[in-house]
Length: 494
Image (tube, rainbow, N blue to C red; front, side, top):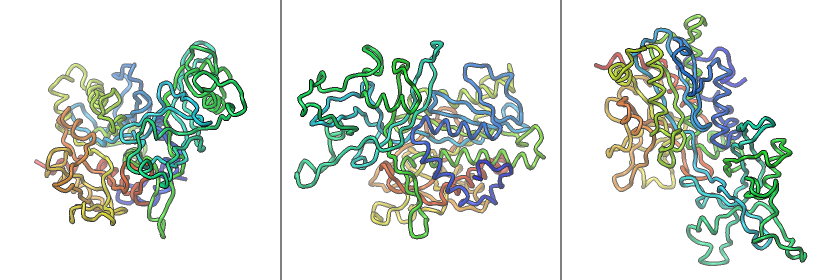
């Protein structure tokens, strides 16, 4: 029985990080796309008593103190929150914000390609920094969401996952000289092969422009996609009428499962660690916090006896700027706080009460950061080199690419002290440029105090990365401690 399915979960100080290693491996292997990840977290929340809300409904009559809620946006973003049993409008929120998207490649709207030299290929486009050199010669599957019309003419969304190797981007042998060196052109040199069609050698009539005969009839969506891929997806989903497939959003992903590595199995080798890792830890922490609160209060109607909101926001599109409606630059988080404020403040929930709520809140912007690489020690600062299996790393930046400051660091350190766990620190060298994440945009939009702090990993932006086997659980421990101790720690600061 994994920690996610235990009825009585440990308090943050007694959390065993190793208990979360296998659950994380299963999670990250089984949910390769952003849509599968959101579905997984939704199912986890429902199984722990959370109520699913709809943005299309009014929430004023649905929210209660002691309640546990979540909702999705676009199937690729999720916000979950609990409302303390003693919550009053204007009180603050303890927030953990992360991003749920990962570097990947997506099928183009028309993914059929001309057959070349007998190879059937698939039209794909890079998402953010995906489709880099590490994508060569990997076993690739296809998955995502499919829009299907039912017998009554209603269109519903279903998920599909072809998790066996159906595609591969072949590299060029070094014997060919200069053409085999350097960054390959992503449009012309990094096109996956998905099958063979040597019918032209047999003297058979070549289809128009060397493409497979489309399935499902002309002028429908499936006619723009590789016929054998349509058949594979329809077969996996039990669809017999191809014309009922209205559209899809599919990703190409590495099929190799996450696994333990190292002589003592101290590593996790996996794809999509950035940032399924902090997202997993944040949700598990919210579940742990709400469960331990329930134990303290005797398990009555109120699952949380605090006076605050505890909230996890998992945003899409961070890797490409966060500008879409499910991204951190949207109204996703602010509208959630506003609706909670209105549900408990009524007509009083104007600018005053809402600003008070934001001012009383604090956010951990949880994104992975760079673990020290022993082969490149010269690119790290000596005292800012995070290690695996040690704990959460505070990410600092002198040029405001991160939200971290002296106050926020001191507050999180007090949380860490209360649960007896260390904090590491990372700052990039003066001759390098820091990356960014969701923290600055969310903090600037709302005025919420914030810190950037996440788990370290090696090989960021590679198709396969490395983190520590204890790091998922170490993240859960710190994040759960933040949820459970923020209220008392915040009161220490004038």
